[in-house]
Amino acid sequence: MFKLLVIFLFLLSSCGYPDIDTVPDFKDVNITDKEAIDLCKINNSDNDQITKCLDNK
Image 1 (tube, one colour):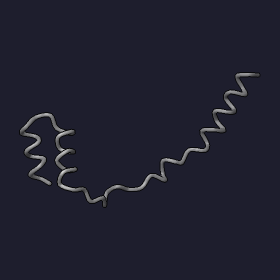
Image 2: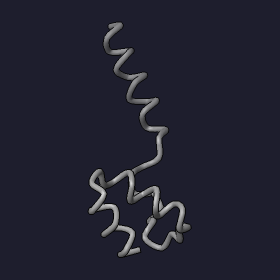
Image 3: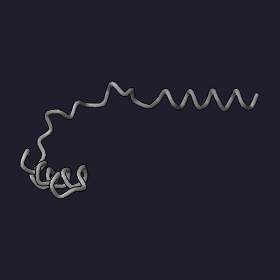
Image 4: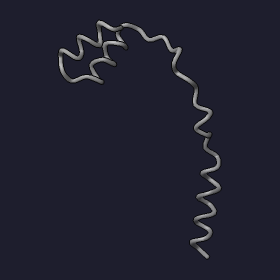
């Protein structure tokens, strides 16, 4: 009985979270040059890749 109660409470609480479809689309977000540089550094570890990434921005 306790297990059923725990499962029921878990399902009840998980229904309160927003659906994945409500996440906004971030395609039209304008980022600053500093943010673009940080993004290139995070996504690329090689200096040549960072340079190519910065040239494309």
